[in-house]
Image: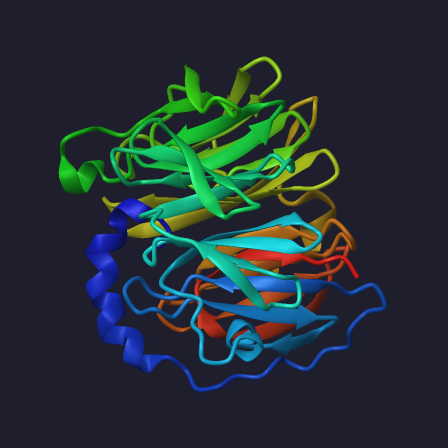
Length: 369
């Protein structure tokens, strides 16, 4: 859920509450704008329940269970963690507990799947025919997939439980988390970024950030990567790291970047700081300009969306469409019931709120017309 290393502590609650899922839902009526998007929404589902799903938001009209509609009789799988548009004809989805990478066309039809990447997490591509996937299995590694054959052609061991991954100039930057440290107790939290040669799949070096538990998806703007450090959720506070992948230099900021995205040379983020001491979440919002690294509170030009986001029960994702500049944020609510997606215009004004027939909406991909 919000933190992978707490997953096993709450999965029983999920299993007990899964029966309370709401009935079929329909989009909240709204007036689609002339420049609305076509957005694919990935819902993680509940771990062990085989209920990951895709929804399509097409110019303000929501289609739930879109994957099942486009592929009758098929399920997306168990715990969809990440979604990535590889090119104009291919979209990849990491399905964590099903141990597969599922591929679809932009119209939602399934193509094939790469199997046997256990406990897979996040995706990156070099746009040259290869996909890269992080995996928690075997003490942590990255798999390289040939997109022509959909087969794993190489792997590279990195730190324990690698999370976010980014590609830049022939290198992979992998955020190591050590997220199972509290369960296995055979290692601590990681605080390094592994730099891997994408061609040879050999680890070149590790960048020590000094910030533990590098958890979540990495967003990229040019040569810069935004990485969240979740801390230890007791006494070490979460942080945000912005890495210059051109020279390995980085800046650390004293707030979390749990859900982050990039748009027009700026990182936007919703920070979710969880404390085991109080069992509460504290939320924050910031933006960082590039390359100046100037920080501002809030979501800059989307500031009118902030009040709505802060009123959400459980903010769970943030995304800005590269085509329209519309901002999308999701609310996971109680993590075991259907979530909401909110759409905001370029001025931050709310355009629509959509009730999904899917649990834990965490990923977005905007498709070109």
